[in-house]
Image (cartoon, rainbow, N blue to C red):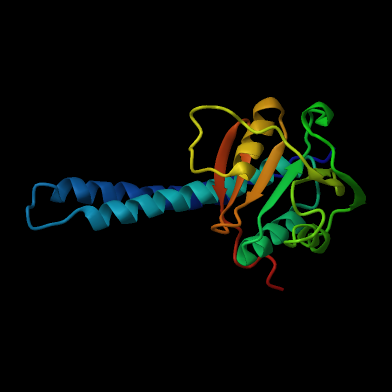
Length: 209
C-alpha cells in the first residue's frame, strides 16, 4: 500500500478565495434586496455556479486523496475519464480499496492487464463487448470488465439519476470502494463514495499533451 499523498494547503487557499467571493456576492444581494429596481436573479445564478465550482474543486482534490493509497495510476484514471467525458462515452470504473468486493459484484470478463488510460478508454467504446458494465481496478491493474453492480434502491436518490449512477451509489453503500462515473447523456463526471455522489472537474491541462 502506498503512502497517502495529499498536500491540502494550495487547495485550501483556492477554496478560501472562492468562498470569500461567494460571501461577497451574498452580502451584495443582502444589501440590494430592498432595491425594487435591482433584480437578484442574475446574482443567484452566479452564486450557484460558484458553489458548483467550489464543490467540483474540492471533489477532485479529495478523490486524489482517497485514491493515492490504493493506486499510483491516478493520472491515467484522470486522463481516461476526461477523454470519455469529451466524447460523451458512458463509463463506470470501480476502484477497490480495503473491502473485498467479490460478494457485491457479479463478475464480468477477466482482463488482468496493467492500468493505462488507452486500455481503459478502449473498453468503453460504444459497441465494444466490454463497454456495458463496470471495470474493476485493483491497485495498478484492470482486473475485469462488464461487471454488474448492485443498484441502490434508496428512496432519497434523485429520480433523474441513471442506472450507472445508481449502481455506483449502490456499491459504495455496501463497501468502501470508490466508483468513477461518466454520463453518456451529459458527459458530466462524478464519483461515488460511502453512498454519496460528488461532481468532478478534471483540469484542462491533464491529457492534452
